[in-house]
Length: 422
Image (cartoon, rainbow, N blue to C red; front, side, top):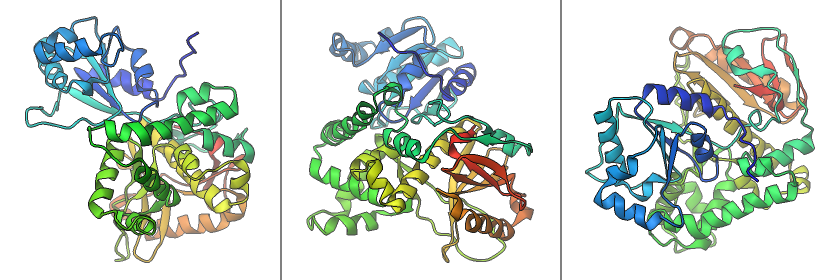
């Protein structure tokens, strides 16, 4: 029996994109729900990896790709990258028809581009999907809205339903739609372990036909997991791996990292380009995360008991989950998420900047004992920002694993992740 579709914040973005573009390219990690979301809007569907017809579709694409584009619109072409020639065919057909919302293209990898592939600019809109936020999985109450914070709304209150045990579970389960729907907790978490195994043993070599060593892939992923929510460049990863593999090279690490990015497994958090009053130089290394914190949980062999005995790792994984949710919410507000860190190691965990220039700064802390230091850090950061150039922040906030949302007397919000929405 088919399970009910869980509404996504991406639904509204998809609707807008179809009204404004001839075609929409939906990208994101495998199993994050791209196809299911696209199906809610499609009037006809072509599954390029259909077990009965895939070979025929590939042949047809090489002979007459326009034949595969016939059907009621919007027409969904799932895993279109199996026949990259479809890109130009879609672009040409959009030009010919001169209508919006003709095609939806979904795929879990970035295909190799060729000199004959046109950019698609002005015809094909790109939309990135992520795994589900806690608000989308109905685990955040949504009492506190980022949009309201940006609009200066006061008087918001909220109480999270999530205990610290719940936080550990939803972090290890992740935001994968099939895992979210699974009521048996052990099976839900096993789903993520299966995802990681497929990634290591299949996807990393199948993406471009280049055989990659599964042991090295796993070791690389574990190294990234050990440095989760921290600035770690390839040199840091190299030093970590070479302790047990002295034959690995910079070139190999760069190749493997490139494949992980093409699979939308690694998700980087860039440094915010900000004008400060001081002349302290910014660090430029992005923070390296996985697209979902559950991937790191599997690679580190984490479970609830281990997390409770290692609150440092718990906190880093919690920060990774917060960043995932903030990115989902920022996407729906036409914004981006960054972090700030300068050469004297002043740092802010997350900066959300909207397309109109408004911004807010957030620290991520597990519990209330860290609240005072986090608030002082945010207020100090605000004082050092060149307000004349950047404008006043719309809000300062601490995202926590606690229960009660409130605004402090110094103006800093304290917001449980289990209360937050877009």
